[in-house]
Length: 220
Image 1 (cartoon, rainbow, N blue to C red):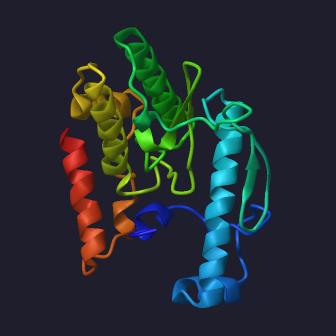
Image 2 (cartoon, one colour):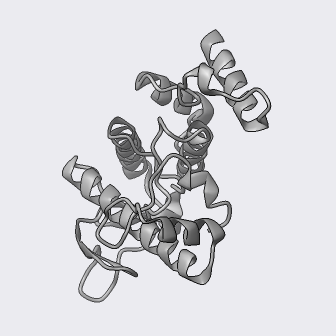
Image 3 (cartoon, rainbow, N blue to C red):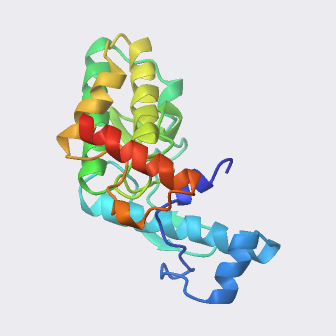
């Protein structure tokens, strides 16, 4: 993935069993992005997706049910018919009544994910399946925690905007930026994670930006 560091911020690296990687050699390989390290990172992405699907499916979100995972794949429930897999929503034209129903259902899932500490990170009509009047959200390897990633709100706002753009083409008018703000604040989330300002280094540009974000957030 391009700019994968944006999604890895604030989350631990996982092994094939979904456990946090503590081995110094493995962590060093991942930091150096050696061939072995990239293999470990790929496994970690799959581990995160599997755990995310487990949590969201248990919470009642419209996601595939995960059954098992390996170092290169996840076994999950199939969406579709005997001869045709469910198409992605971006290929489907909806009538006005169904469009409104699915728009509301998608927002329900977005809010449910927030309530359970997840932002999809790449949500759009390309990552939503449609089958017999129902939707299924897919592709979660890049999912992030809204409270541990400094880019979380911007990523969340992008998700909401992309969803709204699709439904706008189906005749559903909305204000995605205001909607993202409302959902975010409705779950008492900050634009950036709260930190102990005494731990910041004034000589570090990234730490100075965290401090500025914290100050600006306090003014809102």
